[in-house]
Length: 465
Ligand code: 5AD
Ligand code: SF4
Figure 1 (cartoon, rainbow, N blue to C red):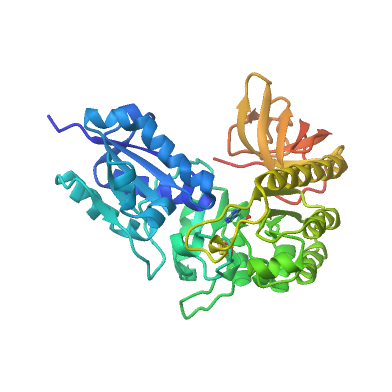
Figure 2 (figure 1 turned 90 degrees about the vertical axis):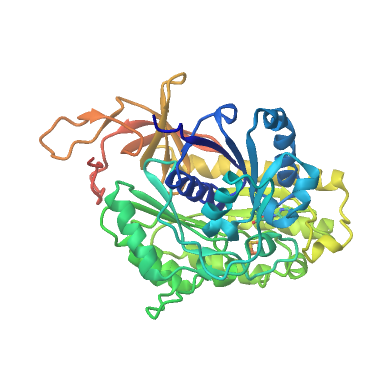
């Protein structure tokens, strides 16, 4: 009888880069004789892919390690991967002695070797250090059946004063455009209709191959891959958000109507202290260029409140910026000092209570803006990619091209290929595209009913499988 396969379970914290790294780690493990299981209790190897962007995120892994510690007695092995691994290194073994593997993202190309050493009986294995090149692997076990992540650039060279990413993920490394396009074509052939291009600064992409495609040229080329219906990209840095990108967005309908452009603060004084490389005015020029695009684009952002030295006036400038830009969505955070960073060594001068109050004011204002602006969608018909169904509410859940969440009711049937067929011909499934007439709008989602495609809809109306 063949020996039972070793099993693993992986929990992921943090950004989409981490989610995708976990897919690549899972793919590597599966290719080396492991099988994935749904519960930590069933696994021989328990992995945490960690985030250290803020103190709270970094703490989470130690809480999880403590919670699962009793399982170590059953002979299970534990691994800490990702940003906390890279940042804390071997100190993790001291803090959580039941950990057997500590591996930063730069070591994933060597993951099979690290796991083999664990298998051979080594008690403590580390994979740390910096990467020279982007991590290319075919061994990806994608978790999502119709949306695929595709990394085009890893790491970050920007060194914002507060940010740990350049230390945990190393310098910027772009992948060759031909390799990216080949993967995009493979994904389309495998049935993925949505691709999300990833990078810590996705638009700082610099093609290392002789083709020397700019980010905008790469976007246009991916948008042209037959079979892809939606292409997203995240996260963009304002400094590198050149007008050429906006022009390409205007020309290719496959590119989603959405730009995520973190501003961090509305005060030029704070932006300078943050070393963001742009002023409020320069950022607003980027916004004006995006607003001038041939088709309307939703703009979302990230914000930090309570950066060292942030005064009431600085914070007021951030609120004014929200009113001026009217973002479609915003992720906002209290400043958290991080090891190795420039501002980590400065006094964390804004008291916690002030940070909390500013965050509350900011989030409330942003919710009001979204609540108000989302009303403009009522009565309009949007194309929605179906993500699932909520049987309790009897609603389908999906996303518009702008990335807005849309909940809708209806026959649950998708559009037919031929006009001669009845209007809704086959049951909806996740990954399908449906047209939804919006009847109600909240701050964070739209509600609607399935509808026939509007007469002007230029695109194919259903997804064949
Ligand atoms: N404290 C608070 N928020 C941070 N971010 C990055 N570093 C910190 C920090 N030290 C936020 C930024 C970034 C997002 C991913 O996390 O807003 O865009
Ligand atoms: Fe961090 Fe700034 Fe790089 Fe973004 S651009 S990952 S905030 S250092």
